[in-house]
Amino acid sequence: MIKKISNIVFTRNRPLQLEAYLQSSVRHLPEEVIQTYILYKQDLFDEEYIELFRRMPHCVVIREENFHVDFTNLIMGIETPYVLFGTDDVVYYDSVPFPLVDTIFSRYPEEIFGFSFRLSPLTAAESADVFREVDIGGEKVYRPDWKEGRSSISRYPFELNSTVYRTSLVQEIVSRVTKERPYLARWFGKDSAFARTLRPLTSMKDFHRWIETFCNPNTLESDCYRWCKKHKAMLPGHLFFQKLCASAIQVNTVNATTHNPIARTEEHTVEILNEKYREGFRVDLDAIVENKPKVTHVGPEYFRLVKYERVNC
Image: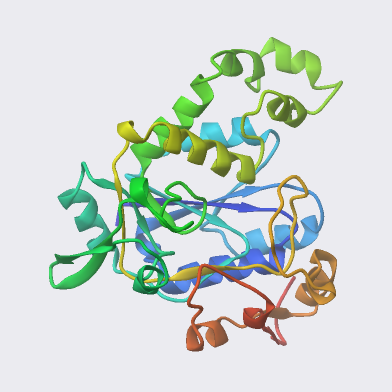
């Protein structure tokens, strides 16, 4: 079957958590229609990552040299009709049939911004949002208007976790964000004379931060989100969803530039988890399926490890 979805996953210093993301997505997403790309920031634990990548030959691994350039080249070269993003602290525990998602994009081409795996009817009950119910071939699906969203989740249309977008829309958004600073592509391209001159002297990431364009996954999400909010009139107005299928299990952080209110604990540092990974411990995905989270972000209470005797790290 021809691949329909490009799944772009961002990772740094979390081989154990990345494996949980990859294994859970294989369990719950239609592998036959998904091509996974891993944008890997090399830092610590390269040996563990190399072994993980060896066991995941279906994934295309891109070692980050310049995040802005690497991501832009990747997204602009994608040919699948849909794109899905993921980060290494997310776990899937449920699914929605891909034909249903595909049908919604076909039936509501002018209305749909994206199909979310991170919304649920419970969100409506706990907020003032209006989630209109629609019937798609006998399946209940919900449709909030993100432009008028009242909760932090429903009014956040562009995010890097668990939402399927039309690739052409994401390419347009990324292109617009970059073109707001038209000298970027000319000056900061990977092979530009300016970049070659500066590379021995300083990090190109520092320049991207200086000119306030995205230089890591966090700033990619925030820049694109702000552009979408600023240009609402240009964009489709509705997110669609059926149920909550994935959550971020937040037990540690790898990005010091963005504040995330997570429940960090001493037993879940990236160093300790990597040692656990080498010892054969893995995230207990069965336990998460049996006790599905009811919100998009959860903490250590869902982060249970189990040891497998025959695991190569």
